[in-house]
Image 1: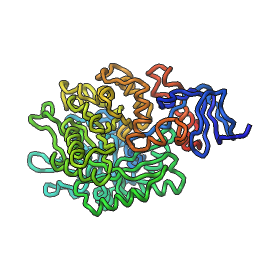
Image 2: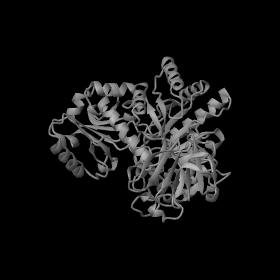
Image 3: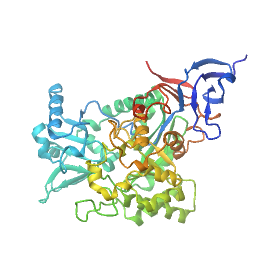
Image 4: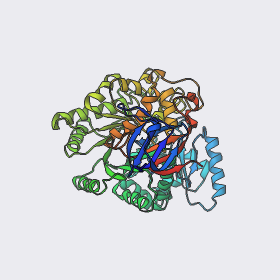
Length: 541
């Protein structure tokens, strides 16, 4: 028989995520695309064959919000899991002993719950002395600095509005050491340049590229065949170009450009030129990232009603509603897709109102604007996602009770009465919204299995009771959110997101069948083999 394919995958359980042909036993690939699906006995001859041994084959995961460029930094003190100041001190001491030559102490992964209230410089001074030290929160939205770092960063009572954040002050106007809005400012082009100029090692280019490479390798190993990097400046694109040139970009990548407040016409024109330059199956640039509010834990997200136990404080939006509506309408008219960070119910409503205004002004179009995170959603706004064509880009792991649930800062900040608003994934799905799932690495684990388990169970990784179990989703729905939903959200559903003849041959073969293993085993399932365009890019062992 003539070989009509480059590769066949046989003896498989193929879950296609294609409603027209949901299951198959074999598939064939030619020139990087799927050319056939069907029964194992009918598989065409091919130059190469992979016998899957009955294992589950899924479309490659499309991670709709994955900070691979930011990543995790091996040069930092790792604070994930440090539950109190004593443990933080132990880890910093161990790191300093191993790095006696260090000019800075840089830490990542700080959990707000580790200290009552917000941390202050004095807490860190006792652990670091005169060596400048900065600590990134696990969500990278806040920065905690010691007194030496405050001096090095030029923070004092007269300098609290910074290129990289807003320094919080006490009742006398003295900076406390806690800096908010770091993700909004510090990760911007100007903010990163300012930090690098001040000598912060973390912000330098010699640390950025290794972080990117580590994250890219991790993504490929997890079966993520398309990565959406949600927040970049024009300066950052050369990092992706370099990775591609060096053969390190083995998963496809879509890069959104950061649109901070004050972005002007010249920058928008430069964004448009970048989108035209980078526009192929491997590297595409184009969506714009905006913020309407910050995050719940430090009470900087915008809520409809006050935070629990904080008087009339409701948080702020970064734009007045009318201003943001006009901005989004102008970007929409120019053909841009918007990814808008919104966590609080008032922040989310402001974004939905802006999309409604844009449609009224410009007329409806297939914009696929995204509300990113959707953490605290008022029930009245649930049906608006589908009616306005807005995608809910969500990170299931964030709603895990060991991160956000009872006794944690998120749940306590909003109060029990608002817990039913927390990550209402099932409500959105049943109302017809498109769900695009993602990891938000390095805020949470990159592994899609962790997110899948959380969305199906609403439990912590160690088990225990489910939090808001009425919002659990079926396994098939969650897999769709990590594949076809995320592909649709990013305008690549025509060639990704399902295993369909004509689409790119991006798939993963799993170690175990998600549909038959006990649910508590899902986080332990691994990608045994990953292919991008029919080429094997990862093979376990």
